[in-house]
Image (cartoon, rainbow, N blue to C red; front, side):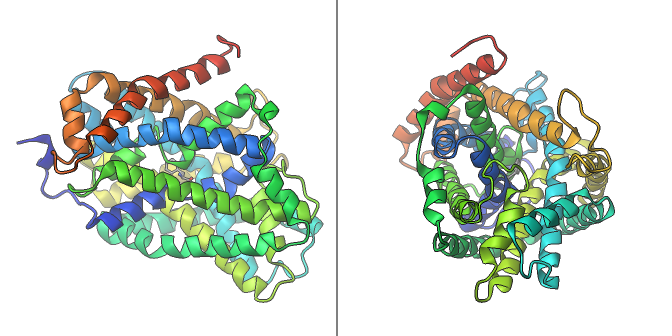
Length: 459
Ligand code: PHE
């Protein structure tokens, strides 16, 4: 039997729309609303955005299509997929590395998702009434330091994620993402419109869109590359795992372009919602991970229905965080159920337990004054290390290996066959351009960035 239809029991998304929203649900998350704005703020605004867009185009999309190829072709989890394509070789190490990266990300992601959930609750209670730049900072500080409340919120996040995942691919992931992603989009647009009508908003837009080439330094490039991977959920088997549930007739190259474009639109809209407020209220764009939490309550303050919109905004950010977490936890869940024969329910529970166990380290080290905030290794605490090792090392290395694998170790005919849906799509030139990028451009760029960040090559 061919690898394509080896398991009749395996679930699939039910339509092209479902594929799109589930994949977008994985891509859109805290990365857009929390990470993108604060990294842009710390790394030079427009210059960072410019490099980021290049990374999405020249590296992100080719890696995504490569992952789609591997996932749908084999219809297996991230480890099993490599084993199916190259049995008995070390290639499956890429899948294992992906599982490791998924854990590291989840340790801190579940913590930040907890802060977002807690902001919904605070907004409902009316804690942000009469807020000023100073009280906004104090609110965020107390949310993060805890120690108990952030941990409880993290447990609530994991409980929600586990319940949805236990319901399965179609009834859980597909249903939730298809309903909620469109609402999220509309809400970010409303926030953006509100923000650009603030007094002094222009300075924020200028910061976000004016490219100052002098600010493009090697660390900025590495950060932008890491963000591109994190944003599009690449380099760690998430997109492979989701593609293993794609429909047979999905035009995967079109899906990757649509997902990358919509995801980038959400990030830019989040930037438009946040930076005008930063400048209008005299805050610091380089404020770091608290940027979102300190500015958004201010954006909506003193506005008609402001508190309702604030609640809605954080509800939707919680949704974005939750749907992205579904795809993160799905990586080890699919691996455990398919490779280790553990039931779906039990693998969800085991994984949630592991995430909470180590996630506590992130939660208690998120701020200098947190319980474990004083513990630093080479200048970073647990929270920052989990983030740095996954985004800036494991995902780009995973991405490099994936493009090399697809570009040089898979037969050209197989790639043409799968990406054209067995010849049903007339997209030969697209596949040809994809192959060119995946063989030459993406690996070269990734190598240059690595050699440079290791200090081997200077530019
Ligand atoms: N893309 C998600 C976000 O931006 C995070 C994520 C990373 C999800 C890696 C899955 C895998 O929030």
